[in-house]
Structure formats: structure tokens, C-alpha cells
Image (cartoon, rainbow, N blue to C red):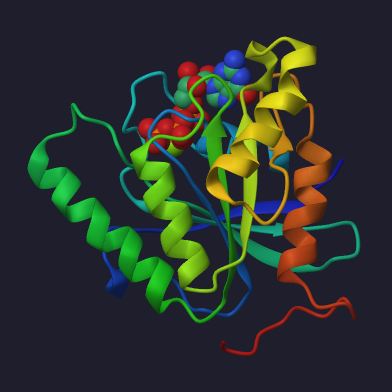
Length: 206
Ligand code: GTP
Ligand code: MG
């Protein structure tokens, strides 16, 4: 079992509802339906985040507290998906400021896992998000997800092409919430990003 504990902490529709910034945080971002909530469930090994085949399922920011085998703790943060055309315009207009206020105003944010659908690659929204995060100096863990839908011999070439295309700092991890492939690697990458080398939770505001 990877997680010693995984607990739902809070949901928020605006910054007043954000929980106390008392642990390092790693957020999961990506377009609607790319599999953010499924991946969180796969990481923690329990159905803590709601998933759905209807895009736009997650409309609030959701915080989960997770702990690794060494009892280091962090918040995993499920962000609402972007880029879903059928969502009413007023709802979309409220999502963007919500995500931006989180990404710009959260002192304990240590990095963002950006998900790309293995069969769709990068579209305008992904380009914008990656450019914005890199310019803001936010650490990015790029992930190609739903790789179970790609033939094995296509996975590495697709990941390498995405890295070149977006000038990513590293090759995207190859992950599937369905098969569990790559989930342990992602778990380790998330903790490496969030927790200082001495193993103590980093609680210093950035
Ligand atoms: P929003 O909350 O709407 O932004 O979506 P989300 O990114 O949280 O996606 P969610 O986890 O709800 O998954 C969307 C759909 O993709 C569901 O039907 C999942 O079963 C499916 N899915 C998620 N991960 C995988 C995967 O690794 N492989 C496959 N084949 N399907 C997946
Ligand atoms: Mg979701």
C-alpha cells in the first residue's frame, strides 16, 4: 500500500474557502475528462475523488491529505478541468479566476502535475498552462495519462514528441489510472517535489 492515510480535507469555490496552508501542496491540473480525479484515486488506492464520464465533474478545488510510508504528509489538490466547451459560459468564467487565484496565491504550492491525454497530446489550453506555469517558476511534473489506450511501442515516442513540442523540462511520465502503470513513479515524484531532503514537511511559505 502506497498511502498510509488519505483523507478528504476541504472543497472550495473561492479563496475564502481554501483550507489552512499548513502542508506542502501538489496540484493536479488538466483538461476536463483527462482523468485527474481517477489518477488521485489510483495514487491513494481509494475512491476519495469523484470521477465521471461526463466532462466537468469536478467544479470545486478539492484537497486531500496523503501520507507516505515514512509518515511525510502533503496535500494533493484536485483542480477543476478546463477547456470543456459545453460548460455554460458563466461557469467557465468563474473557474478560471478560481484556478488562477489558487496557482498564484498559495504559498505552500510546491508544483503542479499537468496531465495530457495520451491520444490527444497538447492543445491550446495545455500550451497556455505550461507556458504560464514555467514563466511563473512553478515546478511542473508532466504526465501522459490513459496510456493503456496507446500501443506500447507508441508511448515513448509520443512522450518524447510532447517534450520537444512544449519544451518541457523532462520527459512526461507514462501513467494509467486504469492499469496502474506509472502510478508508483508519479507518487515518488510528487513526494520528492513536496518534501525536503531531510524528510521533514516543508512548511515555509514560498
Ligand atoms: P473533470 O473532473 O471533469 O475535470 O474530469 P477528470 O479529469 O477528473 O476525469 P475523471 O477522472 O473523472 O475521468 C474521466 C473519464 O476518463 C472517466 O470515464 C474515467 O473512467 C476515464 N479514465 C480516467 N483515467 C483513465 C485511464 O488511465 N485509462 C482509461 N482508459 N480511462 C481513464
Ligand atoms: Mg475530476
